[in-house]
Amino acid sequence: MLFSSITFLYYFLPIVLAVYFLVPRRGKNLVLLLASLVFYWWGEPRYVFLMLFTIAFAYVCGLLIGRFRGRGAAKGFLVLSVAGELAVLGYFKYADFFLATVNTALKTELPLLSIALPIGISFYTFQTLSYTVDVYRGTVAPQRSFLRLATYIAMFPQLIAGPIVRYRDVERTLTERHTTAEDLGQGLTRFVLGLSKKVLLANSIGALWDAELAAQSAGTLTAVGGWLGIAAFGFQIYFDFSGYSDMAIGMGQMLGFHFPENFNYPYTAASVTEFWRRWHISLTTWFREYLYIPLGGSRKGTWRTVRNIFLVWFCTGFWHGASWNFILWGLHFFVWLMLEKYLLRDFLQKLPSWLRHFYTLV
Image (cartoon, rainbow, N blue to C red; front, side):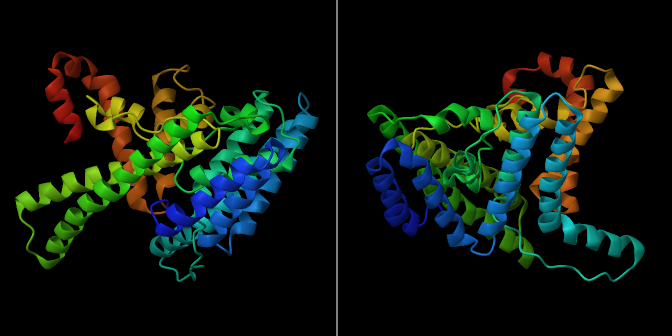
């Protein structure tokens, strides 16, 4: 069920909001969870139980980690949690990629599993991982209410396309929240803004991108058309993704939550490094906190720093999709980030801002 669909806009969202505001405070999490399960079932009826299993697994592991905090068993349950969550993600998202890679490399004919990818699995897996890791670190207390944890992980506004919301960002709000008239108005405004980005801008600009792709396939693509297509794709993906993020943040505010920002005018960036501080902020924040810093960050010398950034961007590419082009996409940005960090930084700072901006967009 797309946020921009008639079903969502005219039926699902109004009904959910009406019921949500009519029920007493103690029933709001239950309403939100049931609405989220219906939302997910609408698009993935087969995999709604997989998501519930993932939530239950994280719930039990969180309780066990909290129960044995300070002892070796806590680390064991953390490893179990991380391994289990990644195993589920790996099976559904990456199994065929690995099999196809082995077939290509070894000239074998292993049969592919042809598994349909569950919608949103990359997002809710990262949320369950951040929850159990934060419980192990002592940043948050283990959530003893399955209803609250399930509401956090399955919450429909951010379930499909983010932003990736860390548990500690909403821990207190899950227990007690209220929506003011100002929250409702601001949330609705943000939602309409995101909907406009998606429907009026992304979809329209995407038509130009599709036309240039068709011209390329037909062998009639011109140089000017090629550059128009590239620009169209850049704007389409931005308005589409940031539009969905705006809609998610707006709906969250209408429901009493305050989700983190996911975009901060990324196409105004004057370097690739700055671009990634502004684009998909919740993802880069997640990788920094749960991969880059645990690996040592930049505290253990240049080569360890380079290695850590390489691993982050390899995983960033792989997270986006199970194919080599996504891995190369991640490594492409790793190269530019390393060039800017160690070779181009002083040179770029001497250039006028408009030229640095132009360089980044190209």
